[in-house]
Length: 561
Image (cartoon, helix red, strand yellow):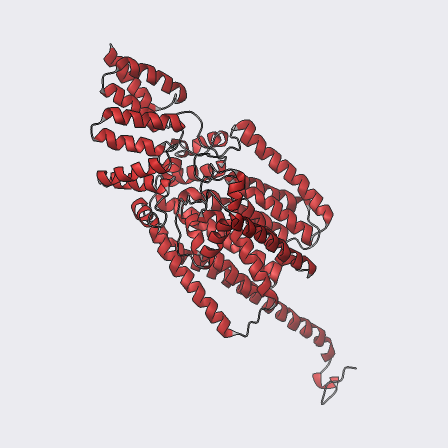
């Protein structure tokens, strides 16, 4: 007999006791489903918030034009103008080769070129479509970061704030707003997708999980070399949070991934691991580059805290670092190791994971391996996740949600970052706007001097353009583009002999296809038929598919007869 307060079971009527268990079960089900729906809706709302903030920030970038390398990698690159050329994109680099055959350059990023080909094939030369893809990938990475952090931290609100910081930070505007930086948004999204797949695995990781993550790392590698770091990061996560036998399986997958990538890059595309050696930083020996590391670290972290000097194409160097720089470098290394040791000692595996992420990602952008610039905002894209993840991990243990004033401060910071990013997005509106702004910050950058000169030339401000081309040739005398552009200005002024000298300098420095075209054209203009014929025949051996050179050669043959 079941007795209730104030009476007996007989008060329920005949057979009343048999309804108690179903009613109680119904109540539990309702409680469960309400909690489940709240959980799902709550997470869904946070995802919508991230999407809304990302779109509000970056949709104004849709009208922005092609700038900088976009012209050689998209606009003038006929290989990416049709999806029918996609197989060809896996057997070369990324830049327009000027008719030499496969795409030229020092990099192997076929997935980026495939993305260009798909967008161009559907929408044509419409910058907004390329920008939309960039924005979507960046927001997607922000969403994946949120899902990873909420799983690791078990703190929804902190995961939301950290992901939003990554989404709207001004240092990431270059990555999202620069169409030729599709490589960065691609490798980040694919790498984060592979990491998330492992993070959501509760206990034992299955082979299918490892294979899926391995495919993501492989695709990230095909987007940019930096994407290969996700193989290391996923392995580190497995080491810290899963069984060692899972790590052995992952290493087996990575051997296949890295091996097949090298086969495609070196064996098929024949793109080596060389770097440009004419930029100021790349010309320095390793010991001198190491002495520059403290300044590089300071640049990235100071711009993360206060993004006041955002600029493309930064080539500043300290060509004679002394004892002080060496001491600071040793201090940085010891400090990083000490913080990692403290994390291990206090069993702070989550902090340690992100701290190693930050360190590993930074090492590959600190000129230990010479790069084609000193610093670049887009190079901090991956290290930033490790940095904000480690900082968030320290906050996570002491997070107090009742301190509303703290939330207010964070909202104010987010608004300030949003406004700063919005201003930077407008700097990327077109080439003239971008270069005229950034050259005030980096006045000695040979890239900026040359690119600003091109925009001045297009605006018919020829005298000003010549000044900047001349500055660029003085700053980088072993480059080729600046000499060719200076030759164009001088040719327009009527000094054909000097223009020929400048074109020849461009050819000797880098076999620049436009310089070959311009040099041949002047020879024909001067009626040097035999010299022009020999030069064109030699040029066509290098650029057999260059239509302009072919047309000039036909013109020479007709007139020589």
